[in-house]
Length: 228
Image (cartoon, rainbow, N blue to C red):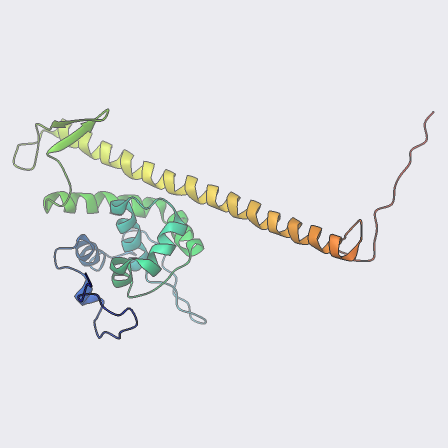
């Protein structure tokens, strides 16, 4: 049976990014939140280039990290790739595409400010019932929590919850750092592998037994040591 509801992928469509984002999407909450914060008062390093290409809006990068935290995106390269394939992030960043180096550098320079922003944002999400509180996972077992928004909270309970959230945020940043290092090491190994394969191919084609990357005409001389 032929499906007549399919659209031609080459068909032009007039539609805005905003129309593609549901009103109930969490990315709208992230956007509304980051547009209200004062990044300088929160301690973020704000670059104001007088010449050259303008720096990325810090609020965009904060929003990107908040989205990554909620979506479990675990590396700067993955965050960069999401700016090209994720409609919600395209909308959030106004179709900006910061590279992974810029994303990682922003985290490195603003670690404390980002942590404090995450804590505040999690509190906002809890107030809006956007994140859990009724279900708690313990060693893979899900149980109903005794405390939720409708219950009274003691100081001890609040301090424990805040400490747990802070640990999760720190763990997320540590995971980002670990994955960024792993991806950097992998890229370095891949680049070296390609370099050596190309050098070996050149040697086979030229018939040479040695190759120098500094002086093409130089050759390694054999050094025979005298034996006593």
